[in-house]
Amino acid sequence: MNEKLSAALIGAVAAVTIVFVRDFLLKIWLDSREAKRNSLEVFRRYADPLSTAAVDVLWRLDEILHKPGRGAYLLLSNPETSFNTYKRLSTTYRLAALFGWIRAFKRELSFLGGRDDEQIRGIKDAVANLEAGLADGEHIEATRLEALLDLWKNSFNGSPGGKEALQIKLERVLRSHVHEPGQLAAALTDEQQLSLCKELAEAIAAVYEKSPPNDRVIRETQARAVQVLSLRESWLYRDWQSAIGDTMLRETAMEGRLFEVIGFGDFEEIADDSELPNRWINRISAITDDLDVTQPPQFDARLQQLRNTIVASSRLIIALAEEDPRRRIPLQSNLRLARDVVRRYA
Image (cartoon, rainbow, N blue to C red):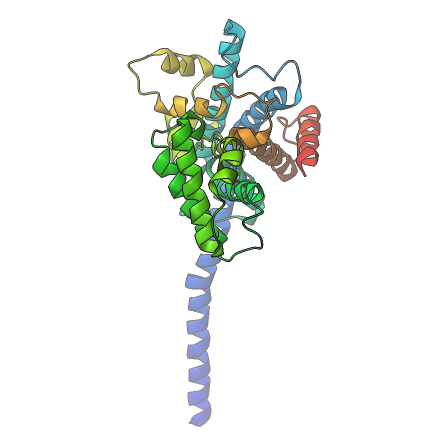
């Protein structure tokens, strides 16, 4: 009787195990494999246009940043020429088109339920770095603090705790004096600049638990402090990048994709039509308008933004080529330039 009971129990457990493996574990494995296959299919549908857009951005930024005498003045409005006007709008379009293809790729992936695939992790990381390079400006706060500490090093020495909190406090002091969007400390009157510098020095002194620099020192360093505080910024936040990408998309059935990016002609019509909301175009162009790449980067944070962008675009091109070496878009000349750019800023 005991033997029959044991055999029955073993048979029951075996049956339950088979059902569990077949109906649960096997289904999970099959679903996971299907999700990975689907994500790879989505990626491969968008890989070529994404690569093309990144290559277009790479060559334009290389022209602007690394070709003295040719690219240095492409973004300046003085003197105004039809060539420069075209180049500025074309640069804006290339960045917007890249945001568009990134947004299309991410939107289609989101339809798969958010499952990840290790095979395209490098692509996702490269995209994330590109987005961060244009959106994150926390390092500017650190740069300002270090520059002010260097100016007033006779009053403040050592390394106090809570530097991040101090950076935020200094940023709030600066914004309390410079109210208008895009306004710089250099636009303040002499007395307003002096008041700003004194308040910043007092904020630093409170953290160091020391006396702030005297009025003579503040006066002597005022011009240099204001120069540091007038670093020009124009960040393109992640939500803005997504909104720009959405603006650039239209539905399509081409090559199995759900979306495609509008062409330059349609983009130019949007830019020229004063009745259309083109705030997104303005937010991109704010990164490049009147940017003088011959100036030191400590005077204009946008220069570092473009350097971040060209490096991130290069890494994206390299990642796309490594995922599928047979892909036709990253030609050897493009890959050589992408690798040269990464080495240049490594």
